[in-house]
Image 1: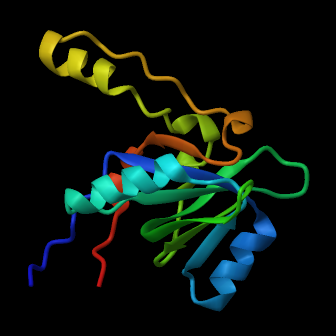
Image 2: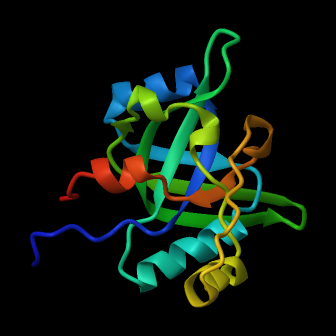
Amino acid sequence: MENSPMPAYPHCVVVLVTQRAIESMLESSGQGFYRDTHPWVVAAQLFAQAQAEQSHMPILFASVSDGQAAAYSHWSMISKIDVLSLTSNRWESRCEFGELHAVNPIWQDIDSVMHKTSAEQILREQVEGIRTLRMPLQENQIHPYAICETPAFVLTERQPTA
């Protein structure tokens, strides 16, 4: 087994939770799962792609407390995404993740993370040298989740996984 950790996938999932939910996760084991009634079909597809490329896909938790603006508080690496159809119009998505890591205060603003850029835009950037326009994430674009570019703070602060 190699000592070097798998690289982070270039895309991540961003969710908005309450500060109480973050505190609950930290009090338990610092890891856990996130459940949503929206089908995370695209997130599950990207997670499968990350696994096929032997990469870890990050999840970022933005939280809101006491009427403050939402801010990133923690991040982790996703270990599993299940999308279940409960009935013809009811879904449940379950995202399991590992140990939570605190986000450095300089990266806590929601707009410090960019929306996922289209494959065509990335190809043009690589092949044609055209600079791709990056769109910062806004709080109202997170629900039920957002797919974004993995931010630099995950790539540089990422610790090896066991």
